[in-house]
Structure formats: C-alpha cells, structure tokens
Image (cartoon, rainbow, N blue to C red; front, side):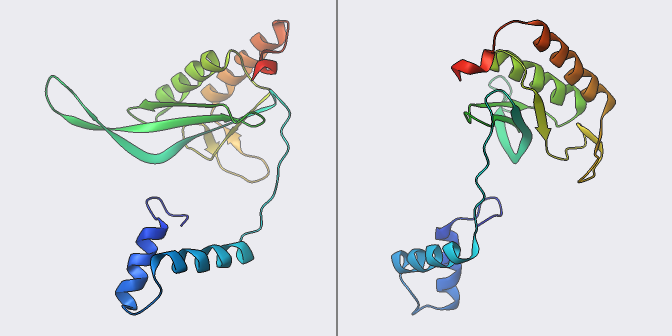
Length: 164
C-alpha cells in the first residue's frame, strides 16, 4: 500500500489470482485493516502555527497536453503543507531542477502570505546538496533564498499564520 498506485482493489485482485476460491473483496478489506492496525503504530506530532512547512515533489508526474500541437509533456507536482493547519499548496513544474524548485517556493510564500520559521524539505537534490540525518548540507542558492525570506518575514509586523 505504500507504493504509488497500489490500492486494496489491486492487492485483492492479485490475491484472487493466486487463490481463486479465497476471500471476497469486503472480507479481504476487513482482514487487511485488522492486520494493518496491529502493525502500523502512529505518532501524533504537534506543530505550532507558522512554525513549519513541509515541501517536496509528489513523485507522480502529470501529463499536460499542449492544445496547439497535441504534444504531451510530463509535469512534476510540487507540494507544500503547513504543519499546524495542513493548508496545502501544490503546482505543476516541468522539472525538479533548482530554478523550478526555488520558483515554486516563491509562489508558495505568496500563496501562504508569508514565510514560516522552518522549511522541511525531503532530501531532494535541488534543495539538499549532501543528505544526512543529523546535519544535511543545503544547496547554497536554496539556503540563500530561505535566509532572505526569513529576514523579510522578521521585518514585518503581525503574525500572518494566525488566520490559517
């Protein structure tokens, strides 16, 4: 279920292909959910308003059709989620390269109406130069963009996130 495109329907169809006289779909779902509850602990996280925004590309590509030529291009999906409110910003870009990555952040800040205290990127190469659990090395351009946004945010008065 953690792989992209996998659903209970697909798992059940694979199960029935191996076991034609096996469980029906509804019973299979019940048993799967029961199994999942035993194995899947959850961890609740508390986020302060305006503290964090989580950013990454979705991993799925979206086909975009040029109406003039009919050409189909694959677009990447940038997603940003505020920790406390789960307010979400998403947009399509052509690549995951640094110019698109930073451009998406600029538009995200505009959409949210400001910059949070912390950006939490996944280990995307455009944002993270050297991955490390304890001390990742952030791409220089990305780090500079973040610092400039933080400086602007600290000069403004009021808390933009209170309405979110």
